Length: 199
Image 1: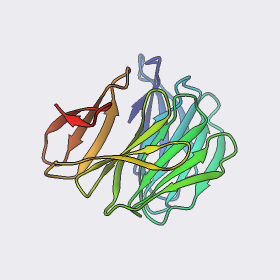
Image 2: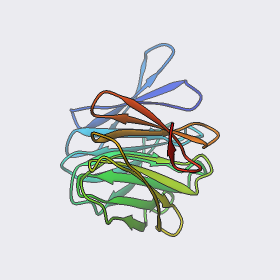
Image 3: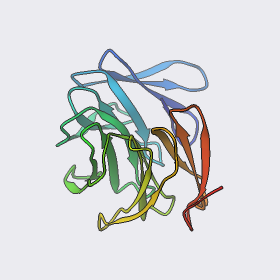
Image 4: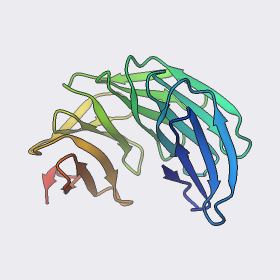
């Protein structure tokens, strides 16, 4: 589930292979986005609320949609496993997708072109998030670490480790200085994203 940045819409990934768009105030159903071949595991809004990204289970694809008209815009293909998480960069130019195939794909949000594949760690990717300035992407991993990567070059920059379970959720504070991690052991940890220190 994801809310649009203005709080007016909510997108739900559903096990009937669709994405539902709803009016978050009235609860009215607005759009049903159809095209996935399996249950929808992740959804995200572009910051202006005009685009929705969705990732699916065994069809292993990411789709981009017009949030106003419901039109399908792009199909991003290349993963070899369930897509667990999708995120837009703040400027709307990139889409990141994490997968069971132990990679993160970076895609051009306009053309759908594959730009980078981030790999070289062990275990599935459970969560992806961009730093608010769009320069870094963070990966929450099954190997109990968080990896920070350069979103432009695809270079691995930093590993945040010391957790005792899978990192299921990664989120940055708006100023980019702190990162919050949701762990499979039912705890949340905060890190200083600048120096890479646990708080």
